[in-house]
Amino acid sequence: MASSSGQISRTIFYISDGTGITAETLGLSLLTQFNDVRFNTVRLPFIDTLEKACDCRDRIQRTFEQDGARPIVFSTLVNEEFNRILGQTGSLCLNFFDTFIAPIETELGIKRSETVGRTHGEINNADYERRISAINYTLSHDDGITDLGLEEADVILVGVSRCGKTPTSIYLAMQFGIRAANFPLIPEDFENQCFPKALSRHREKLFGLTIQPARLAQIRTERRPNSRYADLENCRYEIREAERMMRQQGIHWLDSSLKSIEEISATIMQEIRPSGRK
Amino acid sequence: MASSSGQISRTIFYISDGTGITAETLGLSLLTQFNDVRFNTVRLPFIDTLEKACDCRDRIQRTFEQDGARPIVFSTLVNEEFNRILGQTGSLCLNFFDTFIAPIETELGIKRSETVGRTHGEINNADYERRISAINYTLSHDDGITDLGLEEADVILVGVSRCGKTPTSIYLAMQFGIRAANFPLIPEDFENQCFPKALSRHREKLFGLTIQPARLAQIRTERRPNSRYADLENCRYEIREAERMMRQQGIHWLDSSLKSIEEISATIMQEIRPSGRK
Image (cartoon, rainbow over all chains, first blue to last red; front, side):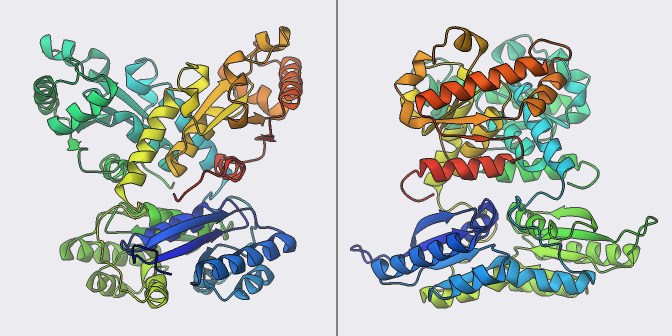
Protein backbone atom coordinates (compact mmCIF):
# COMPACT_ATOMS: atom_id res chain seq x y z
CA MET A 1 0.00 0.00 0.00
CA ALA A 2 1.11 3.59 -0.49
CA SER A 3 0.86 5.99 2.44
CA SER A 4 -0.28 9.58 2.05
CA SER A 5 3.35 10.53 1.40
CA GLY A 6 3.41 8.07 -1.50
CA GLN A 7 5.87 5.84 0.35
CA ILE A 8 5.29 2.10 0.10
CA SER A 9 4.28 0.52 3.41
CA ARG A 10 3.89 -3.14 4.39
CA THR A 11 3.09 -5.08 7.52
CA ILE A 12 5.67 -7.67 8.52
CA PHE A 13 4.76 -10.62 10.77
CA TYR A 14 7.38 -12.54 12.71
CA ILE A 15 5.88 -15.89 13.67
CA SER A 16 7.53 -18.63 15.67
CA ASP A 17 6.83 -21.56 17.98
CA GLY A 18 9.64 -20.10 20.13
CA THR A 19 10.69 -16.56 20.88
CA GLY A 20 10.52 -15.29 17.28
CA ILE A 21 13.98 -13.78 17.65
CA THR A 22 15.47 -15.87 14.84
CA ALA A 23 12.59 -14.94 12.53
CA GLU A 24 13.07 -11.28 13.35
CA THR A 25 16.83 -11.41 12.88
CA LEU A 26 16.33 -12.89 9.42
CA GLY A 27 13.59 -10.46 8.50
CA LEU A 28 15.43 -7.35 9.67
CA SER A 29 18.59 -8.31 7.83
CA LEU A 30 16.62 -8.74 4.60
CA LEU A 31 14.51 -5.62 5.03
CA THR A 32 17.59 -3.39 5.48
CA GLN A 33 17.98 -3.98 1.74
CA PHE A 34 14.75 -2.07 1.10
CA ASN A 35 15.38 1.35 2.62
CA ASP A 36 12.55 3.10 0.82
CA VAL A 37 9.77 0.98 2.26
CA ARG A 38 8.12 1.62 5.60
CA PHE A 39 7.54 -1.62 7.51
CA ASN A 40 5.08 -2.10 10.36
CA THR A 41 6.14 -4.92 12.63
CA VAL A 42 3.96 -7.50 14.40
CA ARG A 43 5.64 -10.16 16.55
CA LEU A 44 3.72 -13.38 17.24
CA PRO A 45 5.94 -15.67 19.31
CA PHE A 46 5.12 -18.97 21.08
CA ILE A 47 2.66 -20.17 18.41
CA ASP A 48 2.62 -23.77 19.59
CA THR A 49 -1.02 -24.86 19.37
CA LEU A 50 -3.51 -25.25 16.53
CA GLU A 51 -5.71 -22.58 18.11
CA LYS A 52 -2.90 -20.04 18.20
CA ALA A 53 -1.99 -20.84 14.57
CA CYS A 54 -5.60 -20.16 13.56
CA ASP A 55 -5.56 -16.87 15.51
CA CYS A 56 -2.43 -15.89 13.57
CA ARG A 57 -4.13 -16.70 10.28
CA ASP A 58 -7.14 -14.55 11.21
CA ARG A 59 -4.94 -11.67 12.28
CA ILE A 60 -2.90 -11.77 9.08
CA GLN A 61 -6.07 -11.84 7.00
CA ARG A 62 -7.52 -8.84 8.84
CA THR A 63 -4.27 -6.95 8.27
CA PHE A 64 -4.35 -7.86 4.58
CA GLU A 65 -7.86 -6.36 4.32
CA GLN A 66 -6.97 -3.22 6.29
CA ASP A 67 -3.67 -2.58 4.49
CA GLY A 68 -4.95 -3.46 1.03
CA ALA A 69 -1.51 -5.01 0.47
CA ARG A 70 -0.16 -8.51 1.12
CA PRO A 71 1.56 -8.85 4.48
CA ILE A 72 5.00 -10.46 4.48
CA VAL A 73 5.38 -13.31 6.99
CA PHE A 74 8.74 -14.50 8.28
CA SER A 75 8.15 -17.81 10.02
CA THR A 76 10.28 -20.30 11.89
CA LEU A 77 7.37 -22.63 12.59
CA VAL A 78 8.42 -26.25 12.39
CA ASN A 79 4.94 -27.80 12.48
CA GLU A 80 3.74 -28.51 8.92
CA GLU A 81 0.05 -28.20 9.79
CA PHE A 82 0.59 -24.73 11.26
CA ASN A 83 2.56 -23.66 8.18
CA ARG A 84 -0.26 -24.91 5.95
CA ILE A 85 -2.71 -22.76 7.95
CA LEU A 86 -0.56 -19.65 7.55
CA GLY A 87 -0.38 -20.44 3.84
CA GLN A 88 -4.16 -19.91 3.62
CA THR A 89 -3.77 -16.19 4.27
CA GLY A 90 -2.60 -15.24 0.79
CA SER A 91 0.38 -13.43 2.35
CA LEU A 92 3.98 -13.86 1.23
CA CYS A 93 5.12 -16.59 3.66
CA LEU A 94 8.86 -17.05 3.95
CA ASN A 95 9.63 -20.05 6.12
CA PHE A 96 13.15 -20.22 7.26
CA PHE A 97 13.20 -23.82 8.51
CA ASP A 98 11.25 -25.25 5.58
CA THR A 99 13.81 -23.78 3.23
CA PHE A 100 17.06 -24.75 4.88
CA ILE A 101 16.46 -27.85 6.98
CA ALA A 102 16.09 -30.22 4.01
CA PRO A 103 19.51 -29.53 2.43
CA ILE A 104 21.19 -29.89 5.83
CA GLU A 105 19.38 -33.19 6.47
CA THR A 106 20.54 -34.48 3.12
CA GLU A 107 24.09 -33.30 3.76
CA LEU A 108 24.35 -34.90 7.21
CA GLY A 109 22.37 -37.99 6.25
CA ILE A 110 20.16 -37.71 9.34
CA LYS A 111 16.74 -36.26 10.14
CA ARG A 112 16.39 -33.22 12.36
CA SER A 113 15.39 -33.88 15.95
CA GLU A 114 12.13 -31.88 15.83
CA THR A 115 13.01 -29.55 18.65
CA VAL A 116 9.88 -27.42 18.79
CA GLY A 117 9.24 -24.48 21.01
CA ARG A 118 12.67 -24.34 22.58
CA THR A 119 14.81 -21.31 22.05
CA HIS A 120 16.26 -21.46 18.60
CA GLY A 121 19.85 -20.38 18.65
CA GLU A 122 21.01 -22.36 21.63
CA ILE A 123 23.15 -25.29 20.64
CA ASN A 124 23.20 -26.73 24.11
CA ASN A 125 22.86 -25.82 27.71
CA ALA A 126 26.58 -25.41 28.41
CA ASP A 127 26.67 -22.59 25.84
CA TYR A 128 23.75 -20.88 27.52
CA GLU A 129 25.30 -21.16 30.98
CA ARG A 130 28.51 -19.74 29.57
CA ARG A 131 26.69 -16.69 28.19
CA ILE A 132 24.89 -15.98 31.46
CA SER A 133 28.11 -16.42 33.40
CA ALA A 134 29.87 -14.06 30.96
CA ILE A 135 27.15 -11.41 31.44
CA ASN A 136 27.54 -11.60 35.20
CA TYR A 137 31.32 -11.43 34.91
CA THR A 138 31.16 -8.48 32.55
CA LEU A 139 28.77 -6.50 34.74
CA SER A 140 30.95 -7.00 37.78
CA HIS A 141 34.06 -5.93 35.84
CA ASP A 142 32.58 -2.85 34.16
CA ASP A 143 34.40 0.47 34.15
CA GLY A 144 37.31 -0.69 36.31
CA ILE A 145 35.02 -1.45 39.29
CA THR A 146 37.58 -3.95 40.45
CA ASP A 147 40.92 -5.31 39.32
CA LEU A 148 40.22 -8.61 41.09
CA GLY A 149 39.60 -11.53 38.79
CA LEU A 150 40.97 -9.91 35.65
CA GLU A 151 42.91 -13.14 35.04
CA GLU A 152 39.55 -14.74 34.20
CA ALA A 153 38.76 -12.18 31.48
CA ASP A 154 38.82 -13.20 27.82
CA VAL A 155 39.40 -9.57 26.87
CA ILE A 156 39.86 -6.27 28.72
CA LEU A 157 38.72 -3.19 26.82
CA VAL A 158 40.50 0.09 27.56
CA GLY A 159 39.86 3.66 26.48
CA VAL A 160 38.65 7.05 27.65
CA SER A 161 35.31 7.47 29.40
CA ARG A 162 32.27 7.07 27.06
CA CYS A 163 34.12 5.71 24.05
CA GLY A 164 31.84 2.66 23.88
CA LYS A 165 33.52 0.17 26.22
CA THR A 166 30.47 -0.78 28.28
CA PRO A 167 27.90 -1.57 25.56
CA THR A 168 30.59 -3.42 23.60
CA SER A 169 31.56 -5.49 26.64
CA ILE A 170 27.96 -6.44 27.28
CA TYR A 171 27.37 -7.33 23.66
CA LEU A 172 30.46 -9.56 23.62
CA ALA A 173 29.19 -11.36 26.71
CA MET A 174 25.62 -11.72 25.55
CA GLN A 175 26.23 -12.70 21.92
CA PHE A 176 29.50 -14.61 22.15
CA GLY A 177 29.80 -15.68 25.80
CA ILE A 178 33.01 -13.65 26.11
CA ARG A 179 34.11 -12.49 29.58
CA ALA A 180 34.77 -8.86 28.72
CA ALA A 181 36.10 -6.60 31.45
CA ASN A 182 36.61 -2.92 30.74
CA PHE A 183 38.83 -0.32 32.30
CA PRO A 184 38.87 3.44 31.74
CA LEU A 185 41.93 5.52 30.93
CA ILE A 186 41.45 8.68 32.98
CA PRO A 187 43.03 12.16 33.18
CA GLU A 188 45.05 11.10 36.23
CA ASP A 189 46.73 8.37 34.18
CA PHE A 190 47.68 10.94 31.55
CA GLU A 191 48.96 13.51 34.06
CA ASN A 192 51.15 10.90 35.76
CA GLN A 193 52.13 9.41 32.39
CA CYS A 194 51.43 6.10 34.05
CA PHE A 195 49.52 3.21 32.50
CA PRO A 196 47.16 1.59 35.07
CA LYS A 197 49.22 -0.95 36.99
CA ALA A 198 46.34 -3.39 37.32
CA LEU A 199 46.39 -3.84 33.54
CA SER A 200 50.11 -4.33 32.99
CA ARG A 201 49.96 -7.98 34.00
CA HIS A 202 47.27 -8.66 31.38
CA ARG A 203 48.74 -6.96 28.36
CA GLU A 204 47.91 -9.81 25.98
CA LYS A 205 44.21 -9.44 26.80
CA LEU A 206 43.99 -5.69 26.29
CA PHE A 207 42.10 -4.18 23.38
CA GLY A 208 41.64 -0.44 22.95
CA LEU A 209 38.75 1.69 21.77
CA THR A 210 39.16 5.22 20.58
CA ILE A 211 36.72 7.75 19.19
CA GLN A 212 36.64 11.01 17.25
CA PRO A 213 36.86 14.07 19.59
CA ALA A 214 33.72 15.73 18.22
CA ARG A 215 31.67 12.56 18.70
CA LEU A 216 33.02 12.11 22.22
CA ALA A 217 32.21 15.72 23.12
CA GLN A 218 28.67 15.18 21.83
CA ILE A 219 28.15 12.00 23.88
CA ARG A 220 29.64 13.54 27.02
CA THR A 221 27.57 16.70 26.59
CA GLU A 222 24.39 14.64 26.74
CA ARG A 223 25.58 13.36 30.08
CA ARG A 224 27.15 16.50 31.59
CA PRO A 225 26.47 19.64 29.54
CA ASN A 226 28.94 22.54 29.77
CA SER A 227 31.45 20.56 31.81
CA ARG A 228 35.20 20.35 31.41
CA TYR A 229 34.55 16.61 30.96
CA ALA A 230 32.53 17.30 27.79
CA ASP A 231 34.64 20.19 26.47
CA LEU A 232 35.92 19.53 22.95
CA GLU A 233 39.48 20.61 23.74
CA ASN A 234 39.55 18.33 26.76
CA CYS A 235 38.17 15.44 24.69
CA ARG A 236 40.94 16.05 22.14
CA TYR A 237 43.54 15.99 24.90
CA GLU A 238 42.25 12.79 26.51
CA ILE A 239 41.99 10.93 23.21
CA ARG A 240 45.48 12.02 22.10
CA GLU A 241 46.97 10.91 25.40
CA ALA A 242 45.04 7.63 25.46
CA GLU A 243 46.18 6.78 21.93
CA ARG A 244 49.78 7.61 22.83
CA MET A 245 49.54 5.37 25.87
CA MET A 246 48.04 2.50 23.90
CA ARG A 247 50.73 2.88 21.23
CA GLN A 248 53.46 2.77 23.90
CA GLN A 249 51.92 -0.36 25.40
CA GLY A 250 51.54 -2.08 22.03
CA ILE A 251 47.76 -2.33 22.40
CA HIS A 252 45.68 -2.83 19.25
CA TRP A 253 42.73 -0.48 19.03
CA LEU A 254 39.93 0.63 16.77
CA ASP A 255 37.87 3.77 16.32
CA SER A 256 34.29 3.28 17.51
CA SER A 257 32.94 6.53 16.03
CA LEU A 258 31.32 5.12 12.91
CA LYS A 259 30.88 1.51 13.96
CA SER A 260 27.95 -0.24 15.62
CA ILE A 261 28.57 -2.32 18.73
CA GLU A 262 27.98 -5.38 16.53
CA GLU A 263 30.79 -4.29 14.20
CA ILE A 264 33.15 -3.42 17.05
CA SER A 265 32.42 -6.74 18.75
CA ALA A 266 32.90 -8.81 15.59
CA THR A 267 36.24 -7.06 14.99
CA ILE A 268 37.38 -7.76 18.55
CA MET A 269 36.34 -11.41 18.17
CA GLN A 270 38.70 -11.66 15.19
CA GLU A 271 41.54 -10.23 17.26
CA ILE A 272 41.11 -12.41 20.31
CA ARG A 273 40.08 -15.59 18.46
CA PRO A 274 38.96 -17.59 21.48
CA SER A 275 39.60 -21.27 21.02
CA GLY A 276 36.85 -23.84 20.67
CA ARG A 277 33.29 -23.65 19.50
CA LYS A 278 30.71 -21.18 20.47
CA MET B 1 33.52 -37.21 9.38
CA ALA B 2 33.16 -39.44 12.45
CA SER B 3 35.19 -38.66 15.57
CA SER B 4 36.86 -41.39 17.65
CA SER B 5 33.63 -41.63 19.67
CA GLY B 6 31.73 -42.36 16.45
CA GLN B 7 29.92 -39.01 16.69
CA ILE B 8 29.45 -37.12 13.44
CA SER B 9 31.43 -33.87 13.28
CA ARG B 10 31.32 -31.03 10.75
CA THR B 11 32.96 -27.65 10.34
CA ILE B 12 30.55 -24.72 10.02
CA PHE B 13 31.63 -21.45 8.38
CA TYR B 14 29.79 -18.19 9.01
CA ILE B 15 30.70 -15.79 6.21
CA SER B 16 29.51 -12.24 5.79
CA ASP B 17 30.45 -8.87 4.30
CA GLY B 18 29.38 -7.45 7.67
CA THR B 19 29.70 -8.75 11.21
CA GLY B 20 28.52 -12.29 10.47
CA ILE B 21 26.16 -12.10 13.41
CA THR B 22 23.05 -12.62 11.30
CA ALA B 23 24.62 -15.62 9.56
CA GLU B 24 25.58 -17.12 12.91
CA THR B 25 22.22 -16.48 14.57
CA LEU B 26 20.43 -18.16 11.69
CA GLY B 27 22.92 -21.02 11.44
CA LEU B 28 22.72 -21.77 15.15
CA SER B 29 18.94 -21.90 15.06
CA LEU B 30 19.10 -24.49 12.26
CA LEU B 31 21.83 -26.53 13.91
CA THR B 32 19.88 -26.85 17.19
CA GLN B 33 17.75 -29.26 15.17
CA PHE B 34 20.72 -31.63 14.90
CA ASN B 35 21.66 -32.38 18.50
CA ASP B 36 23.73 -35.45 17.76
CA VAL B 37 26.26 -33.73 15.55
CA ARG B 38 29.34 -31.96 16.85
CA PHE B 39 29.93 -28.70 15.00
CA ASN B 40 33.22 -26.79 14.84
CA THR B 41 32.67 -23.11 14.21
CA VAL B 42 34.73 -20.73 12.06
CA ARG B 43 33.62 -17.10 11.79
CA LEU B 44 34.79 -15.08 8.78
CA PRO B 45 33.26 -11.60 9.01
CA PHE B 46 33.97 -8.47 6.94
CA ILE B 47 34.56 -10.35 3.66
CA ASP B 48 34.24 -7.31 1.44
CA THR B 49 37.02 -7.65 -1.15
CA LEU B 50 37.80 -10.17 -3.87
CA GLU B 51 41.04 -11.06 -2.12
CA LYS B 52 39.27 -11.87 1.14
CA ALA B 53 36.68 -13.95 -0.72
CA CYS B 54 39.49 -15.97 -2.30
CA ASP B 55 41.12 -16.44 1.11
CA CYS B 56 37.80 -17.79 2.39
CA ARG B 57 37.59 -20.22 -0.51
CA ASP B 58 41.11 -21.49 0.18
CA ARG B 59 40.41 -21.90 3.87
CA ILE B 60 37.19 -23.82 3.26
CA GLN B 61 38.97 -26.09 0.80
CA ARG B 62 41.78 -26.83 3.29
CA THR B 63 39.18 -27.64 5.96
CA PHE B 64 37.39 -29.95 3.52
CA GLU B 65 40.65 -31.85 2.96
CA GLN B 66 41.52 -32.00 6.66
CA ASP B 67 38.04 -33.02 7.81
CA GLY B 68 37.36 -35.45 4.99
CA ALA B 69 33.79 -34.14 5.08
CA ARG B 70 32.06 -31.25 3.32
CA PRO B 71 32.01 -28.07 5.40
CA ILE B 72 28.65 -26.30 5.72
CA VAL B 73 28.78 -22.58 4.86
CA PHE B 74 26.17 -20.12 6.09
CA SER B 75 26.60 -16.92 4.15
CA THR B 76 24.98 -13.52 4.05
CA LEU B 77 27.26 -12.25 1.28
CA VAL B 78 25.41 -9.99 -1.11
CA ASN B 79 28.07 -9.80 -3.84
CA GLU B 80 27.33 -12.37 -6.55
CA GLU B 81 30.96 -12.73 -7.61
CA PHE B 82 32.00 -13.57 -4.02
CA ASN B 83 29.19 -16.09 -3.73
CA ARG B 84 30.32 -17.72 -6.98
CA ILE B 85 33.86 -18.03 -5.56
CA LEU B 86 32.58 -19.71 -2.40
CA GLY B 87 30.57 -22.04 -4.61
CA GLN B 88 33.85 -23.38 -6.04
CA THR B 89 34.72 -25.05 -2.73
CA GLY B 90 32.39 -28.01 -3.07
CA SER B 91 30.95 -27.21 0.36
CA LEU B 92 27.26 -26.97 1.15
CA CYS B 93 26.69 -23.21 0.73
CA LEU B 94 23.48 -21.86 2.20
CA ASN B 95 23.01 -18.21 1.38
CA PHE B 96 20.27 -16.48 3.33
CA PHE B 97 20.08 -13.41 1.12
CA ASP B 98 20.15 -15.20 -2.22
CA THR B 99 17.24 -17.33 -1.13
CA PHE B 100 14.85 -14.74 0.19
CA ILE B 101 15.71 -11.44 -1.52
CA ALA B 102 14.18 -12.41 -4.86
CA PRO B 103 10.66 -13.20 -3.56
CA ILE B 104 10.67 -9.98 -1.52
CA GLU B 105 11.78 -7.95 -4.55
CA THR B 106 8.96 -9.49 -6.57
CA GLU B 107 6.46 -8.84 -3.79
CA LEU B 108 7.43 -5.19 -3.33
CA GLY B 109 8.00 -4.57 -7.03
CA ILE B 110 11.36 -2.89 -6.37
CA LYS B 111 15.00 -3.94 -6.39
CA ARG B 112 16.99 -4.12 -3.18
CA SER B 113 19.29 -1.20 -2.49
CA GLU B 114 22.54 -3.26 -2.39
CA THR B 115 23.55 -2.23 1.09
CA VAL B 116 26.82 -4.09 1.46
CA GLY B 117 29.04 -4.30 4.48
CA ARG B 118 26.79 -2.35 6.83
CA THR B 119 25.44 -4.09 9.88
CA HIS B 120 22.60 -6.32 8.84
CA GLY B 121 19.74 -6.08 11.26
CA GLU B 122 19.68 -2.33 11.64
CA ILE B 123 16.72 -0.81 9.85
CA ASN B 124 17.96 2.69 10.40
CA ASN B 125 20.08 4.81 12.64
CA ALA B 126 17.26 5.93 14.92
CA ASP B 127 16.71 2.30 15.90
CA TYR B 128 20.37 1.89 16.71
CA GLU B 129 20.47 5.06 18.82
CA ARG B 130 17.39 3.84 20.65
CA ARG B 131 19.07 0.53 21.50
CA ILE B 132 22.24 2.21 22.80
CA SER B 133 20.20 4.68 24.80
CA ALA B 134 18.14 1.80 26.22
CA ILE B 135 21.31 -0.06 27.26
CA ASN B 136 22.61 3.02 29.08
CA TYR B 137 19.23 3.56 30.74
CA THR B 138 19.00 -0.08 31.79
CA LEU B 139 22.50 -0.14 33.28
CA SER B 140 21.85 2.98 35.29
CA HIS B 141 18.54 1.55 36.57
CA ASP B 142 19.78 -1.91 37.47
CA ASP B 143 18.97 -3.53 40.79
CA GLY B 144 17.15 -0.53 42.22
CA ILE B 145 20.28 1.67 42.04
CA THR B 146 17.99 4.67 41.83
CA ASP B 147 14.30 5.40 41.73
CA LEU B 148 14.92 8.58 39.76
CA GLY B 149 13.76 8.47 36.17
CA LEU B 150 11.55 5.40 36.51
CA GLU B 151 8.88 7.33 34.62
CA GLU B 152 11.05 6.89 31.52
CA ALA B 153 11.10 3.10 31.84
CA ASP B 154 9.19 0.94 29.35
CA VAL B 155 9.09 -1.85 31.92
CA ILE B 156 10.28 -2.33 35.51
CA LEU B 157 11.13 -5.91 36.46
CA VAL B 158 10.67 -6.91 40.09
CA GLY B 159 11.55 -10.06 42.01
CA VAL B 160 13.89 -11.52 44.61
CA SER B 161 17.65 -11.19 44.27
CA ARG B 162 19.15 -13.43 41.54
CA CYS B 163 15.91 -14.48 39.89
CA GLY B 164 17.12 -13.28 36.47
CA LYS B 165 16.14 -9.59 36.42
CA THR B 166 19.48 -8.15 35.33
CA PRO B 167 20.30 -10.33 32.31
CA THR B 168 16.68 -10.10 31.16
CA SER B 169 16.72 -6.30 31.44
CA ILE B 170 19.91 -6.06 29.43
CA TYR B 171 18.60 -8.42 26.78
CA LEU B 172 15.39 -6.39 26.44
CA ALA B 173 17.46 -3.24 25.96
CA MET B 174 19.96 -4.73 23.55
CA GLN B 175 17.59 -6.77 21.37
CA PHE B 176 14.43 -4.67 21.45
CA GLY B 177 15.54 -1.18 22.51
CA ILE B 178 13.36 -1.43 25.63
CA ARG B 179 14.21 0.77 28.63
CA ALA B 180 14.09 -1.93 31.28
CA ALA B 181 14.67 -0.91 34.88
CA ASN B 182 14.77 -3.58 37.57
CA PHE B 183 14.11 -3.45 41.27
CA PRO B 184 14.69 -6.14 43.88
CA LEU B 185 12.14 -7.33 46.45
CA ILE B 186 14.20 -7.80 49.60
CA PRO B 187 13.71 -9.40 53.05
CA GLU B 188 13.08 -5.97 54.59
CA ASP B 189 10.09 -5.48 52.29
CA PHE B 190 8.69 -8.84 53.42
CA GLU B 191 9.29 -8.18 57.14
CA ASN B 192 7.55 -4.80 56.91
CA GLN B 193 4.86 -6.25 54.63
CA CYS B 194 5.42 -3.14 52.58
CA PHE B 195 5.74 -2.99 48.80
CA PRO B 196 8.56 -0.60 47.74
CA LYS B 197 7.06 2.88 47.64
CA ALA B 198 9.15 3.95 44.64
CA LEU B 199 7.31 1.35 42.54
CA SER B 200 3.74 2.09 43.55
CA ARG B 201 3.48 5.02 41.18
CA HIS B 202 4.49 2.84 38.23
CA ARG B 203 2.27 -0.17 38.74
CA GLU B 204 1.26 -0.42 35.10
CA LYS B 205 4.93 -0.87 34.12
CA LEU B 206 5.75 -3.59 36.63
CA PHE B 207 6.42 -7.16 35.57
CA GLY B 208 7.51 -9.85 38.00
CA LEU B 209 9.97 -12.71 37.80
CA THR B 210 9.88 -15.66 40.12
CA ILE B 211 11.97 -18.82 40.29
CA GLN B 212 11.91 -22.29 41.84
CA PRO B 213 13.44 -22.31 45.35
CA ALA B 214 15.93 -25.10 44.59
CA ARG B 215 17.20 -23.27 41.48
CA LEU B 216 17.51 -20.00 43.42
CA ALA B 217 19.42 -21.70 46.23
CA GLN B 218 21.80 -23.19 43.65
CA ILE B 219 22.42 -19.82 41.96
CA ARG B 220 22.90 -18.02 45.28
CA THR B 221 25.21 -20.75 46.57
CA GLU B 222 27.56 -20.13 43.66
CA ARG B 223 27.75 -16.53 44.80
CA ARG B 224 27.77 -16.91 48.60
CA PRO B 225 28.16 -20.53 49.72
CA ASN B 226 26.76 -21.56 53.13
CA SER B 227 25.05 -18.20 53.68
CA ARG B 228 21.59 -17.52 55.01
CA TYR B 229 21.09 -15.74 51.64
CA ALA B 230 21.59 -19.04 49.77
CA ASP B 231 19.85 -21.31 52.29
CA LEU B 232 17.01 -23.30 50.68
CA GLU B 233 14.52 -22.53 53.47
CA ASN B 234 15.28 -18.82 53.19
CA CYS B 235 14.89 -18.96 49.40
CA ARG B 236 11.49 -20.66 49.87
CA TYR B 237 10.47 -17.91 52.28
CA GLU B 238 11.57 -15.04 50.04
CA ILE B 239 9.90 -16.48 46.95
CA ARG B 240 6.63 -17.19 48.81
CA GLU B 241 6.55 -13.65 50.18
CA ALA B 242 7.50 -12.07 46.85
CA GLU B 243 4.76 -13.98 45.04
CA ARG B 244 2.23 -12.97 47.70
CA MET B 245 3.27 -9.35 47.33
CA MET B 246 3.04 -9.45 43.52
CA ARG B 247 -0.39 -11.11 43.75
CA GLN B 248 -1.60 -8.37 46.14
CA GLN B 249 -0.32 -5.69 43.79
CA GLY B 250 -1.86 -7.29 40.72
CA ILE B 251 1.52 -7.73 39.02
CA HIS B 252 1.81 -10.30 36.24
CA TRP B 253 4.80 -12.56 36.62
CA LEU B 254 6.49 -15.60 35.15
CA ASP B 255 8.79 -18.32 36.42
CA SER B 256 12.30 -17.94 35.03
CA SER B 257 13.56 -21.34 36.21
CA LEU B 258 13.27 -23.24 32.95
CA LYS B 259 13.30 -20.36 30.51
CA SER B 260 16.16 -18.70 28.67
CA ILE B 261 16.53 -14.93 28.81
CA GLU B 262 15.36 -14.89 25.18
CA GLU B 263 12.14 -16.68 26.15
CA ILE B 264 11.56 -14.50 29.21
CA SER B 265 12.18 -11.36 27.14
CA ALA B 266 9.89 -12.41 24.30
CA THR B 267 7.13 -13.14 26.82
CA ILE B 268 7.57 -9.74 28.46
CA MET B 269 7.46 -8.07 25.05
CA GLN B 270 4.04 -9.64 24.50
CA GLU B 271 2.83 -8.25 27.81
CA ILE B 272 4.07 -4.71 27.39
CA ARG B 273 3.43 -4.45 23.62
CA PRO B 274 5.29 -1.21 23.04
CA SER B 275 3.70 0.72 20.24
CA GLY B 276 5.36 1.38 16.91
CA ARG B 277 7.94 -0.43 14.87
CA LYS B 278 11.17 -1.83 16.08
